[in-house]
Length: 89
Image (tube, rainbow, N blue to C red; front, side, top):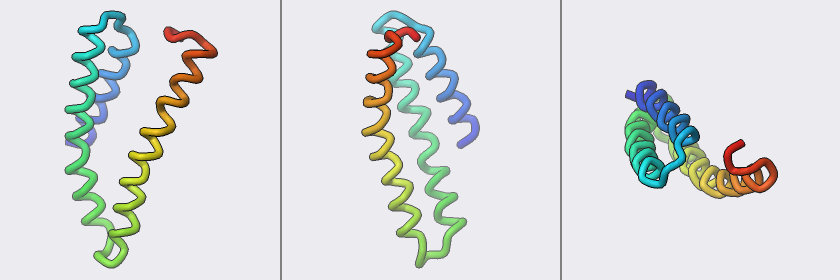
C-alpha cells in the first residue's frame, strides 16, 4: 500500500506540474491528498513495529515534526523558485 501510494502520488504531482487548468489542478490536488493519506497507516505500523514502546514517543514526534517543517518550507521554497524562475520552470 505504501509503495503504490507513493508512486501514484508522484504521478499525480507530475501531472499537476504539466497541467494548466484550474479544474485539473483542483482534481489532482484532491487526488494527491487522498493518496498521501494512504501512506499514514503504513507509516504508523512501521513506527510501531520497528521501535520499542519506550522510544516510540521520540520517533512519533520526529515523524509529526516533519509534516510541520515541510508545511512551512514547501511554500517558501516554491514561492522563491516561482519568483526567480517563473511559475512554469
